[in-house]
Image (cartoon, rainbow, N blue to C red; front, side, top):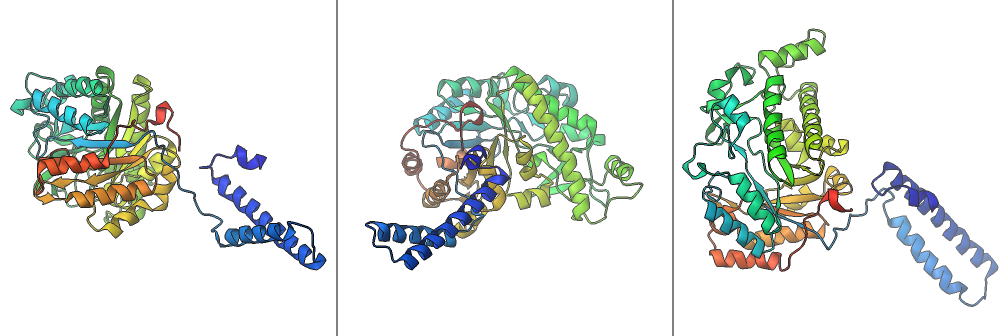
Length: 438
């Protein structure tokens, strides 16, 4: 028992110790039953003890010795987040509209917002780093001019008790016709056929080369600029902080690969396991560097990641968040599980890497509340939230703000009433750095 008490529940030794203890207890129960039968004991209470121990033994023998006990979510905290983006939404483009949105979220007991700060090849806040590299300090959308949107979100959000974690939505991605792509073509990576454009739906995208030192420095400088100049609670990245696996065939990356492989060129098959692993490891190295840079400037600034499930993130975006989590460079994980099929939704919540992460850090689930041309009914949202809670996750976050109630086939009041039923009372954000425990 003393050994068990000294081993943290998430430690690999914990299950091993439990297994040995259970086996010994089962054997002891069996021996005791045998002894009682041989002696035909008539002592008062012996039969009751034997029956009780028999039940314990039966339960233990049927229980998987390597099973993981679900981590209970603290009743005093739950992530209740929403992403604020400038795509199919104008919530960020007007001061009063933004203020009213934050007020309504607070009234409905949300506690976290993820405002986009890096989209379409521009910053959504006044940036000296962007001005130097792109030639513009701010996204040219009229509604952002003459103001500092991020400063407003932080100020108004904190007044209302909201946790504010800026989101680098585009990561290394940019529109093919963006100022960034035009001014820094040498920063772009390409496909094996030499082409650079990758389709995202109907849109033409290009990708900055995440292995190029100048690109890494630029992205890191943007991140540190926010951490230094704004009272943010964290910084969030997603799969766009990786790279589509069909990319990486630019001259710089190929030369780097050859240098580390005795002159051998990377596989022409972009899904080749070794080629995927090499690129993913390079991105992991950069993620570690970014984590260190954030902490060097503000120790209590959380590093949050909102990826797709691990298999998709790793195979399609070279984003190995499972490894990041094991390394301790992710402090808040929000897994995007945008599924209509409830069985598929549930299956994504039960993968081993998800359960392992739950024992280390707050793990929440991203739920789709709708898209511009795809309405998600409130009943589906409520059911998915309940399935998340049943499995003791740290909370939920919705993509995206406009589809909470402004873009939906259901009436705004009905939608807001639905969210009020999901979050009937206020609760705290599950902050790993301020006492959250699994």
